[in-house]
Image (cartoon, rainbow, N blue to C red):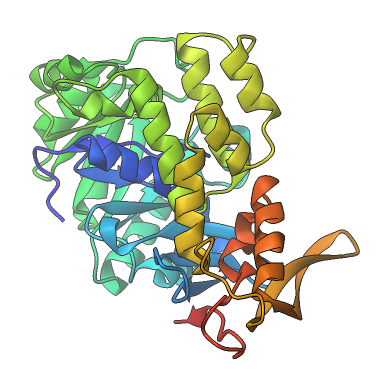
Length: 395
C-alpha cells in the first residue's frame, strides 16, 4: 500500500464499519481505517466467508455466536486498514494473523485516550512505553506480509514526540499517523498542526496528519502547515462523508447512500442507528421528526422507510434469499430456516414448507425487519430443491 498523497478515513468506534468505509471510499477516500478492535476479542473469533450470500463478505465472528466483530469484502481489500488495540506483542501477532489475509494493512492504536483503552495498557497508555511499542511493532513487521503502521498523539514536548516517532520509524513501519492533540486535550481544543510539522521534518517515512479537518479545503491547509504526506479525517467525515470530494454532496443524499449500504451489507441496526444519529446531531436535532424516527427504529426496514428506501430494501432481500414474488407454485416444497427462541437466544430451526408458506414467512419477517444477522440463513432456497444448506464456508 502506498501512503503518500492520500486522503484517509480515520478509525472511529461504532462508525468505521463496512458500510461507512465503502461510503467514504465512494466519495474519494484512498485509505479507510476500520474501528479499533481489541486483540483479546479477536482471539475469541473465527474467520468465515459468506459463500451463500449473493453479495459476499468475509466476517470475523465471535465463536459460538452470530456476533460479527469485523466485516469486510473484496471491494475494499486494497484500501482497508485493520486497527488493533493491544498491549502485548505475542497476542497482537496472533490476533493480526486472523485478519491479515483480508485487509491491506494492520495499524496499532496508540492514541486513544478513553479509559477502557488506557486501563488495559492499550491506546494512549503505550505512548509512555517505548520499549513495548518497539516489541509490538517489530513482532508484527517481522511476521506479517502486509504493511504495519501506528497512530499516535502528541506528547508533552516536541522533543518527546519526535524521539518517539524516530524510534517507531526504526521498527520498519510503513507510515505513522499523528493526531495533533495531547492526551489531556479535548476534541474542542484546537489541533496543533505546527507540532505535527516537527515530526514530518524528523522522519523519512510518510506521516499522516490528523486533526481539525472539517471541509475539503482543510486537506490542503493542513498539508501546507505540516508538510505531511497524507491527511486523515474523523469527525469531518462522520458529519458528511463526501468531504473527500472537492465538489461535495448534499448531506441528505449522503445519509440515504449510507442507509442503502447498510441494507446491502446486512448491517446491524444498533450501529446503523448510532451513525445516523451522529450525522443528524451535527446539523439538526434528534428532537425533530427525523431524529425521533431514527431513535425509535428497531430494524433496517424501519430505517429504510424513514429514508424512502423500502423498494431497495425489498429488492436486496429478494436477491439475497432467492425469492421473486409472483413466481411461486404453492405445490412445490422447499426447506426454510426460520428463527426460533430458546431461552431468550435466537436459533434456527428447519421446517418443511410450501413455497407459498415460505413467502408468508418472509413477508411477515421482512415487515418487522427481523432478518438481522440471521438473514443470510433465513432461507436457503425457494426453488432449488429440498437439499439442506451447506452453511457458511469456513476458511
